[in-house]
Length: 398
Ligand SMILES: *[C@@H]1O[C@H](CO)[C@@H](O)[C@H](O)[C@H]1NC(C)=O
Ligand SMILES: *[C@@H]1O[C@H](CO)[C@@H](O)[C@H](O)[C@H]1NC(C)=O
Ligand SMILES: *[C@@H]1O[C@H](CO)[C@@H](O)[C@H](O)[C@H]1NC(C)=O
Image 1 (cartoon, protein in one colour):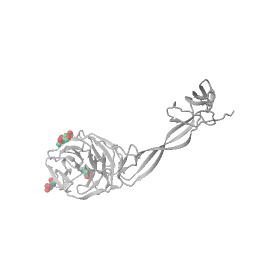
Image 2: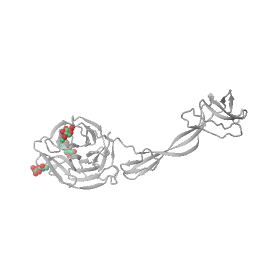
Image 3: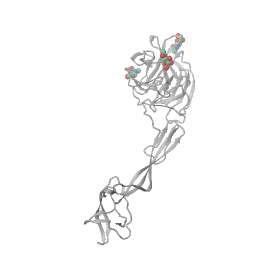
Image 4: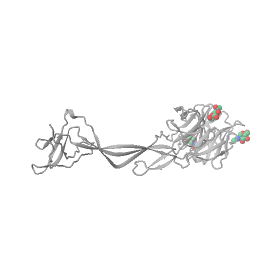
């Protein structure tokens, strides 16, 4: 049996995921729904056509040549800017919509108005559609593409988790990254094998982006370390001085990195800076006869990098500071009674005027007040032959 097919006008709201229903013009003056009239209820012979508006994703990749803050055009929500730490590829996802029209696959009923030529007036009736058991497979076809409002989302290359300015000290020994409770000395291994799994040193905590930065000598590169120990190279950054073992980052995102307090560089790690990764200044200083293994920046004590080191001539321990203005070392205090300490390889700053330092022979952790008063032993951490420390200086808890 063949049945004449004719368009059918209806508006379905019963199916919640369906935005609307195909609306076709009534043609040929035949207006009644094609079905069996059961007294105001029509059992339809053919499935009503449903129109569904579905999201449609397209992606494009854009290359950002250098670090910086990039402003996106209109229509990008919720982000309006992206910050690139270096050259990166950005995937831009456009969300458009497209319309799919298909015969209703499930049972449905809806109210429809149509012209009843027998009664000569407009009538409202209920249409019912029940698919037969053999016609349950429905192939949907895209009939048109709607270029509507484009909302776009933007994702840059996945960023590993930043740290959270917590109270801990962070310690690197060779290529293994640890979290140290300075008060108890309890040490947790976060991750081993950072970078190319060769020694990393001169680490500093950047309070502007909550990542730790350090120097990997094998590749002469700056390495960025995330909370989970994920590391990546700061692409395109200048190399710190060879053999750098001393490092910290100041409040302006400047990475001060040096080999034993002698040759030093100031490298810009301010997120989004036009000179990101570039050497702002460099030179050579004389650390007053001290062997320097780390330094710390403590904002409230001024523009200095403090260090406690061993006097190779006298064997004593002293605190000195490097002036970021004059680029010279100045003596702060001598500790004539401190004999047991060997090399203070990992030093941590706290913005109440305290320098914490761990002795790499014994693992002892000491507190040195910046005002030069007597240091004291706080706890015992791990000993090490190659190490460096970093800490979020702004956290005042130990
Ligand atoms: C290191 O020791 C030498 C010799 O005793 C002394 O002249 C020098 O001032 C000391 N350095 C510091 C920073 O105390
Ligand atoms: C202590 O660590 C420093 C810095 O990594 C290293 O240069 C030095 O050789 C170590 N000293 C000892 C005695 O292990
Ligand atoms: C800084 O805070 C630490 C940890 O609470 C404390 O042990 C130390 O005495 C404080 N130092 C100063 C100079 O207030």
